[in-house]
Length: 302
Image 1 (cartoon, rainbow, N blue to C red):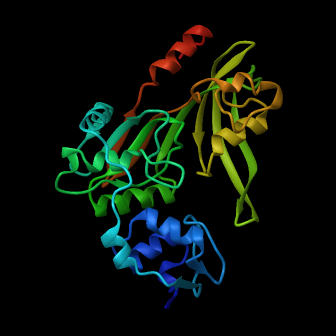
Image 2: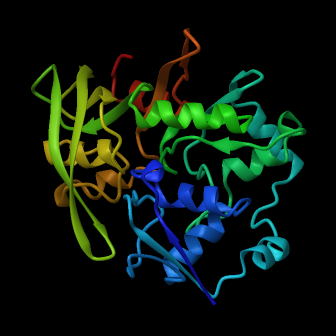
Image 3: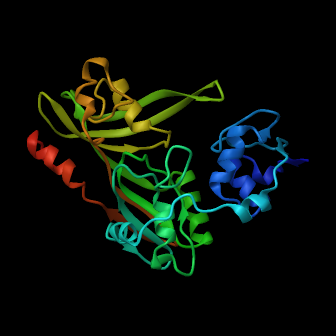
């Protein structure tokens, strides 16, 4: 059985996974990802990723999918222990009626996917903080990046925060320890980053403000404020600058590959700013102990 949906103008430029959730209610993100990956959901006859943005008059095909049966039989992929829930609750910076702010550890995904099981959304789903609701993920942060992560407590706040991120009205600041001594004290990085969508090459503009906080002959401590929000943007841009982030085993120079095998990626999201209903919010997250230890060893001041 094939179901066919035609995209109306009101949904133009919406991510396909969000369109599917609006069209067919209560579908887990993981199930959408799986069916897009296997080609059981196609856009204009082609396989696409969940981040793909749809356009007016696009045709969405669902091939032999019984969503309701899958939803009913689907079991949570990850059930955290009480100990894990409590340890992550200790990372909370802010907890109010609308959202939670967490100082995320490195090495944990924000939501489940094909490559990860343990994730923050499933952890907080079992927390008493979300006893009468559920956690909503409103943005992303790499698994190996530590720092600030927002979780909405209700659909209204989730939609609002998601819109703020999309409109670039959420301002994030990162700190990173990078290889080598960066010459310019500050500036703006402008690059064309390449990614692939089903073997289709896509060029994306990326912009980041940067400032060198401290440096020596071995490494530099850099503050970065991304203007755009591309996947792995900061990591790719620092590689293109010739100063990849220490601990980055994916984006590094050949002669620095051994140095990049640091146990942790030295990238931390330390501040976020946004406004809701004319109220300004600013949250700061101190870097993890291993980050501060590395700064001390390399005699960098923050």
